[in-house]
Image (cartoon, rainbow, N blue to C red):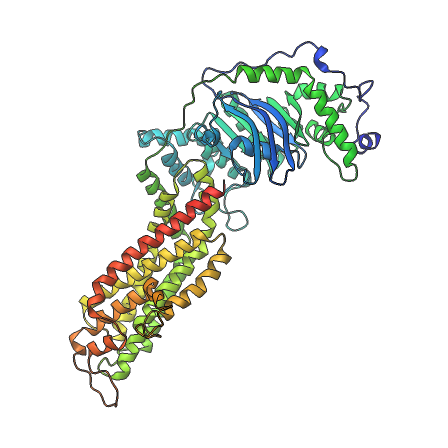
Length: 624
C-alpha cells in the first residue's frame, strides 16, 4: 500500500491504522437530509449486478437512491462503472449485458418505461445544424408539449426555458455543426441540449458528462443551471461527471463514487471529506476534492494489485458505515409505491408536420446541394437537347436516338436521386435513434416526413431537366409532354424509395453505396434497351419485374411512339421500323401495359418504402 499511497500523493491526514476495518457504525447515526416532496420522483436501485456475456463483472451489488430536489453525481475513475450504472438506470445501451437487481421509480418497476417520466441529456450534442436555436425549440415544443396547449402557451414555455438556460441572445443564431459549419458555442450547445430536454417539464433528468469539453466558466454555468432545475423546480437529476472543479463538486447534493464496480461512497461532498479521512486518505489544503478521491479509487498501471486492495478496503469501510445504513433506510422509505405521471404524448399528424418542416428547411438551407442539383439538371437537359437537337423523328436514325433519349431520362433521374439521398440520409440515424428512444416521435413519422421533404426537391429538379430536353429534342405535343413528366415523376419516386430503403437498411454511407452500384447495374440492364426482355433466360427474367427502369422505359416509349407522327416512317434500308407500333414491338413492349405500369410503379414505391421502414425500425430498436 505504501507504493500506491506515494504514487497518488496521499497526504498525512491518516487514521492511526488505515488498514483497520473497524466499522463506522459506532458513530452517531447520520441524519437523513431530505424529505421527498409531495410531487416528485424518487429512483432507487438495489443489488445491481451487471456482467458481460463473457462473464466480466461491471457492477457488483450496487445500491443507491436519487431523490427529487437533489442533484446526484455518479463519479469514479475510468472503468469504474459509472456509465454502465447510468445506462442500466436508463435501460439503454445494455446489449450484451446481463443485469440483475431491482430498479424502482416511485416504488414501481417500469423498465424501459423510464423514458415516459424522464429526459436524457447525452454527452454528444446532436442537432439539425441548419436550424436556428429558436426554430429548433419551436419545433421541439410542438413535438413534446400536449396538443391541447395553445400556440401562445407553447411560445411562453419556449421563452421560459430559453431564459432558464441563458439562451436569449442565441435565439436567432444557426446551431451549426462543430468542425463543419459555424454556429453557436459549445456551452450554448450544451445549454440548448438541456433546454430541449426540459421543455416537457420532466420530473427526472439524466445527464452524461454534461461539462465535458467545456471551459471552467461554461462548466460552472451548466452546473448552476442543473442546480436551479433541481433546487428550484424539484427535479430529480442524475448525472455522470468526470473530475469536476472543486466549486462544481460542491454544488452536488449527493455523490456516488464507484470503484471496480462497487460503491465506494454515497453521501454529500462534506461527508466525503470525513469518510475518506477516516479511511486514511485525507485531503490536503488547496486540493481539488474530486481529483483527490478519484485518485484513491483508481486502478493505476503497474500497481493493479495494490490499487485493488485499497479499493476493496474503501468499499468495505463504506458498506459498514452509518452512511450506508442511512442510504438503506432511505431506500426502504422511498421504495413505497407512489403514482407516476407520464409525459404527455403528441398526435402523429403534429409530429409529422414538425418533422417535415424540419427536414424541408434543412434541405433548402443546404444551398450547395440545391444549387448543384439544379445546375446539374439544367446542364444535362441542355446537353441532351443540343446533342439530339430537333431530331428527325421520321428517320430510322432519329427513332434510335429517341429510344436512347427516353432511356437516359430514366437513368439520370434514378442515379442522381438515389446517390443524393445516400449522401445525406445516413447522417440522420443518430438523431433519429436518440429522439425515438426519448419518446419524442415514432419511426413512421420520421419516415413519412423524410419522404415528403425529398419529394419536393427531386420532383422539381427532374421536371427542369425534362422540360429543357423535351422541347429541344423535338418530342411531340403538349399532352404527351405532361404525361412524360408524370411518368418521370413516378420513376423518380421509385428510385427515391429504393434510395431511402437502402439507407434504412445499411449501417453506413459506404455500405449503402457499395450495395447501390451493382443493384442499379442489374436493374438498368433489364430495363428493355440493352436486353430483349422476352428472350431473357427464365432463371433471371424475373429481375425485370422489380426494375422501375422496365416500367418507366416502356411507359415512355409507348407514350411517344403511339403519336400519329409515327404512323408511317420512311425506310431506305433492308430492315427498318415502319411505324410507331413496330418500334414498340421491337422492344417487346405493349401499348396495353401503359396504365398498368404507372400503377405498378406507384405500388412498387409503397412496398419498397414499407421494407425500408421495417428495416429502420429494427435498426432503431437494436440501437437502444
